[in-house]
Image (cartoon, rainbow, N blue to C red; front, side):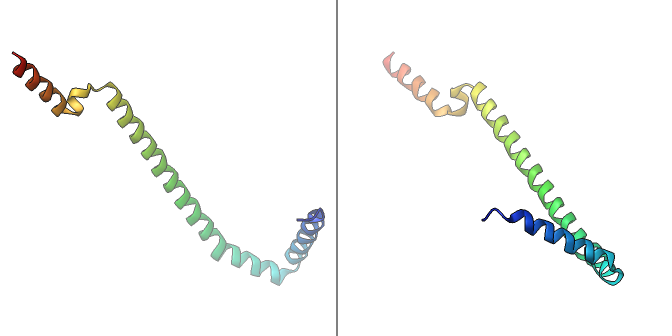
Length: 93
C-alpha cells in the first residue's frame, strides 16, 4: 500500500457528494440503502449480538463448572477412588 491513500479517500468523498447533489442518483442511492443495505446491516448486527450472547453464556457456564469442580471433593467426582480405598482398608483388617 502506498502513501497516496488520502488522495483516494478525498476523491471518493467528492464523487459521493456529486452523486448526492444530483436528484436521480440521490433517489437511487436512497432506495438502494433503504431496501438492501439497512436490512443487511441489521441482520449482521442481530447475528453478531446472538453470537456474542452465546459466547458469553458459554464462558459463564464453563466458569461455573470449573468453580463447582474446584470446590467439590474428589471422592464425590470420582466415587470409585473412595470405594477402592475402603476395600483396601477392609482387606488389611
